Each structure stands twice: as C-alpha cells, then as structure tokens.
Image (cartoon, rainbow, N blue to C red; front, side, top):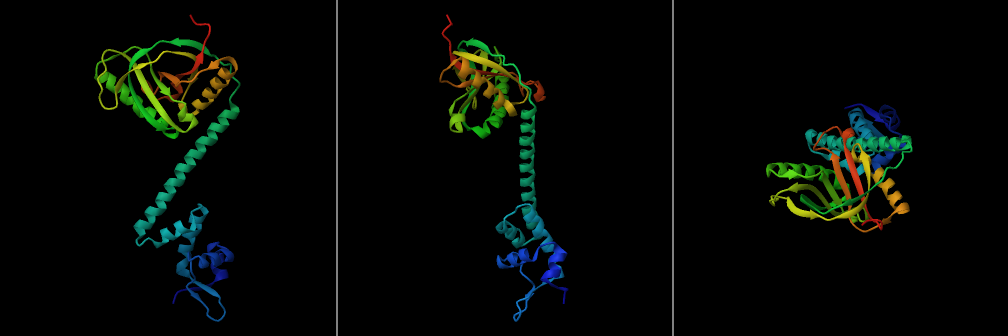
Amino acid sequence: MGTRLTIGDFSRATHLSVKTLRHYHQVGLLEPSSVDPHTGYRYYSGEQIPLAQVIRRLRDLERPIPDVKAVLAAPEVTMRNCLITAHLDSLEAELTRTRQAVGSLRDLLRRPEASLLVEHRTVPAVAAAAISQTVDREDVLAWWQGALGELHASVNAQDLTATGPSGGLYDGDIYRHDRGQATVFLPVEGTVRAIGRIVSIVVPPAELAVICHHGPLDDVDLTYGALGAYTSSHEISVDGPLREYYLRCSWDTQDTAQWQTEIGWPVFRADTD
C-alpha cells in the first residue's frame, strides 16, 4: 500500500490549499485516493503528488479546468506532452506579442515631438503591374510582404522595366470595417502578361498630401495619424484609397531600419493648374 496523506499533509507537499484541493475534488480534476465513509476525511497517495504538481503549473499558466482535464485524460504520455507543448507554444507567442506591444508603447512615450514635413504632390496616371485582393486589416502586413515579393519577381521574369518605385493602394474600408481592397503595384514600361495573381492596371491620377515614414511598418500607424491630423486641419480630404510608395522596402534590404515609405493622403487642391 502506498503512502497515505491527509488533505493537510498533501496540501503542504503540493502547495495547493485545502480549499483548492476540495474544489478540484468537486469538479473531478484531482480526486482523493480514498474518502473515509464515516468522517468524510479525504486522503491522498504519495503517487498523486507529481500529478498535483502538473495541475498546479497548468493552472498557474491560466489553463482552464476543462483543458487541464483534457491533458490529464490523454491516454498516452506522448499525447499529453503534445497538448502541454502546444499550450506552451501558444503562451510564448502571446508573450512575444505582449513584449512587442510594450516596446512599441515605450517607444511612443519616448518619441520626441518631430516637425511634420508634408509635401503636396500631383501624381499622374501610370501603367503598372499589380496584385489586388480583399484582405483583413490584421493580415495586411503579411499579405503586403508576400504580394510585393511576388510582384517584383514576376516583373523581373517578364523582363519589364520599372519606371518608378513600387506602391500600394488601400481602400478606406480596411480601416473603417477591418476588411477591404488592397493593391500593390509597380509602374513598368512594356506589356504586362497576366500570370497568376499579376494583372495590368492603370493607377489613377491623384492630388496627395505626402509624408515619409522611416523604418519598419510596425508603427506606421503613428505616421498615418500625424498625416491624418494635418490634413484635417490644413486640407480638404477627398474620398479615395490611401497610397504608399516604397522607396526602400523588403525587396531592397532586410534591414527594416533602412526602409522608407511615402504615405499619400488624397486631398482637394484649388491651387492646381
């Protein structure tokens, strides 16, 4: 017969309170090895201590009781370990996102007040190779990375000559409703053959208020915010997709600190010829 522990001794051995042990018994998570039918006293075995230690750590990681039950009910140790590993991977990914958000917020608090350099630009219509798709806002950055690489590779494969930097058109619904039309384009000279997602388009003309964002696109919303505040005070904003021009991007260098992205906000200008 194995070691028989009272609930108090088992509590001290596992660092689980008596109240918690009673609750785990009630919900069927960790049942005593025996219960005295006359006194109702709960007794645990020494073999249950490692199980209690696993439960405590899973609960410390905020794993809900039904999920802990699923782990413990796994018929094989390998399957149980896979479930635990999957949860740990999820927690590490969440921790990474939290650290990135904390770092971004600290950078925002430390960011010095910068002078806003806004340029007014008349952009003519231009023929271009392009990729367009309806995307969710949370997927825009990943979609942009893949589409831009595919666009440049296809233009090179077709021996087309780029006539300007690559750019993007982003419908307002992406920001208003979290889903909308996104387009990346590359102005080219020559006939674009439709291959895969590549199509030929004419990027329409526009009057833009333009500001340059330096560095990675993780915090490009700050530059958008500054430009949006400027246009609301000094310009007449018009409906139309927001524009980006990638002067230096992932296609040119993997050093995100070297990236330069021009952001164009469509405006009405009465002083144009």
